[in-house]
Length: 77
Image (cartoon, rainbow, N blue to C red; front, side, top):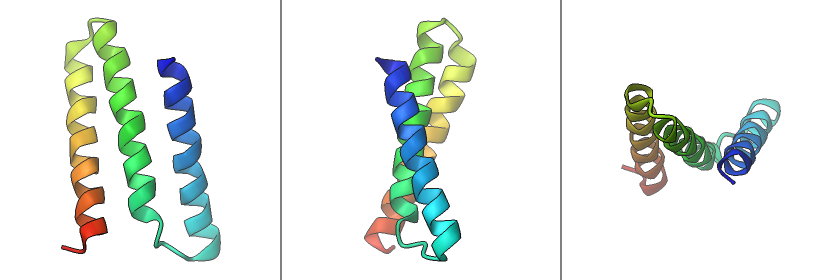
């Protein structure tokens, strides 16, 4: 289930990134960041289940930073 979620989040992230690059329209960048953070969170959970706590905490920390950036951009601060 986690692999499917990671794959889904990655595909959505890549879709938003390609759209932004090809159309020169970056209004969906916060959504791209949101889904990228979701993919990082899922990867962190997978690493935690493999008892790789160091890389899991780095991934979750990166996820939190990406979520913060995404919400900051969406709220216009």
